[in-house]
Amino acid sequence: MTIIENKALPESFIKTLPGSAYSDPEMFAREQELIFEKMWFCAARSADVGKPGAFKTVQVGRESILITRSRSGEARAFFNICRHRGAQLCTEESGEVKRSFQCPYHAWTYDLDGKLVAAPNLTKMPDVDRVEYGLRKVHVREWLGYVWVCLAEEAPTFEDSVMGDVRTRLGDIESIDHYGVENLELGRRITYDVKANWKLIIENFMECYHCATIHPELTEVLPEFADGFAAQYFVGHGAEFGEDIKGFTVDGSEGFDRIPGVTEDQDRRYFAVTIRPQVFLNLVPDHVILHRMYPLAPDHTIVECDWLYLPDVVASGKDVSHSVELFHRVNQQDFDACERCQLATDSRVYADGGVLVPSEHHIGAFHEWVLNSLQGTD
Image (tube, rainbow, N blue to C red; front, side, top):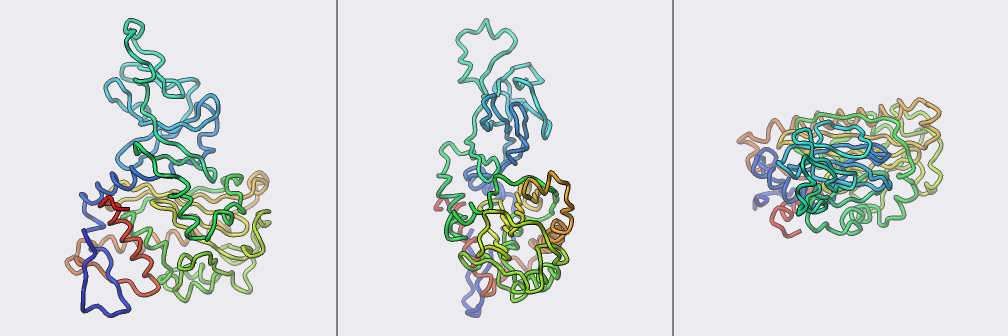
């Protein structure tokens, strides 16, 4: 698939992907295989598997992945498939085991490092290598307080891919280090069931041409967004709070104490980062908001959104509703817009796609990245 050229297009416009790119099951299957199953994928919050035996199952591309923590405290990830006859090992979304995972079909049992430790009549099969026939491992990395996995045989360099996207957006890694995201704690989590293609959600997050139209609360806090230029449009740029705005809250009221590492240059500013293929990172002085997308079908994406605060804010039970409500409304407004777009992707009118205005031209680079990834050239 290529972006359709139109020689009659005004110089101000560039073409989008065609409508079928957002609804075609075959393209979605290729995206699952060549993007989500090849790249680093932010799968779970580290605290969700905070102790040995705690586990979480997540859908990554076409695969169910089991994430847990070993007895030594290290994050582990495996394909959620018993090596005997292929039964799904864990059907629960989350839980905790004491020492091992046991397949409910034939009782093949694996320790927290994935080694096969027991099975009916296993002692009568001395030729079976218990490591070789253990659970199939997945590459794991912990960063920013989250467990990232990669299903590829050879994982891309984490520093060049995941951290590279942060560096490209902010200009360096040190800027994100100031927020100490890995030390923040979960204040609120909201899960959104979005009837739209994952690319529509990313495109929406990357631009602010729509902000003045559908985000009245956000543009009140960040007035420059009303002009249509998103924070991601400029390397290292953060949108500045309005003059009378005290905090990143739904009514502009005061938030919480500034995260200690946040610099004066970062104070009273909002920074947005897209980490391909499925993470949005939102940085403000007193908290961090992290979105994770789980694409399930061409027109179906689950988005899990975490609001992260300093530990004392969470421990003290302080009311975080004003800061949560601001981006919760933004999320609802954005996802409604994405669902409206999804409804038109199969229309004959949108078969050749639409156009991007100048403030959206960086979305064209995202489209090129998607196409290159599906062709194996990125």
